[in-house]
Amino acid sequence: MVRAIVQAAKALSLLSLFLVLGCGDPEATKPLPTPKFDERDAETTMRWLIEKAKPFVVSGERSREEQSNNPLRKEYYKAHAANTKEWNSFLESLRGKQVIWPVRAHLIFTQEVEVDCIPAHLDKDNIDVIIYFAQYPDPKDPYKHNGRIISGRLIIGKNIALEEAKRLNQGTVFAVKGVIDQIMYSLDVGYQHITIYISDTKAVLP
Image 1 (cartoon, rainbow, N blue to C red):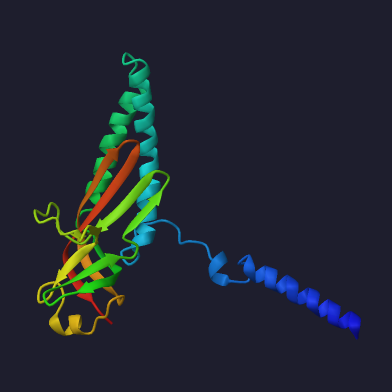
Image 2: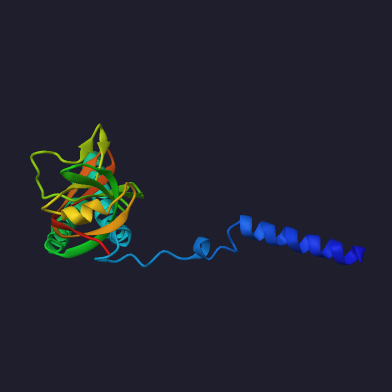
């Protein structure tokens, strides 16, 4: 009897350890979707863009190192010029693509709803991607509220119907449909930034 109790206790301890390590949680071991352009999943698309950017980033680093060391050499410089043309063509090819990406209502006002894309920002391997639900360029800079960066604003009666806005609470998750208006790429002290602007936005509530 005592032996059986001891064995049961050991089994319980192993099960507890198994769960703590996440081995027993299907979500903990669930692999991320393969990076690709996904019109219904912002995160998968953001990871795809980061993977696409890596060769361009590497060629840029090599070109800068080459020119810093000896500007008479042009091997990596020429390779990066070709990569830059290819990268810009790739970004241009994404313009006009329709997306329906999930958002979370942040603040609700009488005339507009502030939203955060899910996720609003993804950072990996010194490359970050951020999404704005606004046409580029927007002269009003609609992305900040009290110093906090937001993904965008849905104007009630234009981007979201009044009856739809009434159904929302802070934190409500729904979708926003729009088209990729522009994708901007910039370099900032060794850090690469990819900014996606989504225009013609419309809320899509279940």
